Amino acid sequence: MNQRVALVTGGTGGIGTAICQEMQKLDYQVIACYFKQGNHDLAKEWQKKQAMQGFDIDIVYADISSFNDCEKLTDLVIEKYGKIDILVNNAGVTHDATLKKMTQEQWQDVINANLNSVFNMTKTVLSNMLDNSYGRIITISSVNGRKGQFGQCNYAATKSALYGFTKSLAQEVAKKGITVNTVSPGYINTEMLASLRDDILEAIVAQIPVGRLGKPQEIARVVAFLAEEQSGFITGANFDINGGQYM
Image 1 (cartoon, one colour):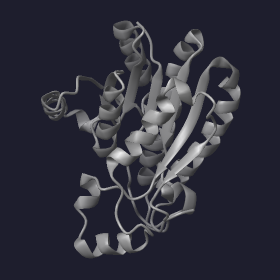
Image 2 (tube, one colour):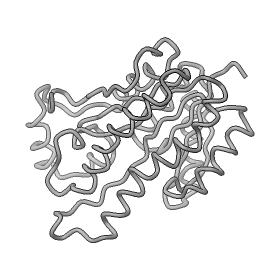
Image 3 (cartoon, helix red, strand yellow):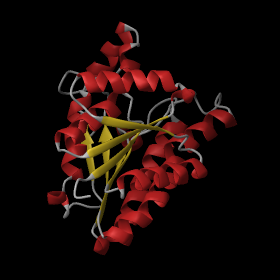
Image 4 (spheres, helix red, strand yellow):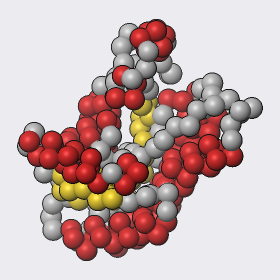
């Protein structure tokens, strides 16, 4: 029971994988929550791949846009491991379109996946953290929540909203041993970006002063730092990791 327990949503994606691995290096019990349209075989393959690299990571399926699913997920993890010390809200989606062309479904899907999911997970996990007088809540936002982005009114709105959510909750639980922070990545070298055309990638890199894409591990190290007990005096803060693209 002394081992810290970390739950990472979107844990099997590019940044999520790096976060899970970095948490494991700190000897935390790590649970990766996945959705992937219910592709359980793909998640199991991911878990086996992690094991081959020496990482013992549990996997749990949940649709975190559903409050009921989040309650079930939280209960399952607490029943199995006794507590949840660290919550990393990492899951998210994009459905890009200019507002003129954006459908209500595109708007609502992104709101549900990126914003409502953070409420759902944090709300269901918080009671256990309050009972234990300890918790680390780390939410992944985005550089585009800071500066906006053409064709991403929905995505940028959700990511920007996370700052207000984080600062407000940080005040509510500051004396309860719980910290609440955001990390805002810039453009990170994940499979999603790798699928873009070369000319689009070149245009993105041209906007980044350090002259390259970020690495998932660079996000994971900051998340792991915020998850540590020694980071208890950091709360209500945001960490920009974007290569100087937004300062």
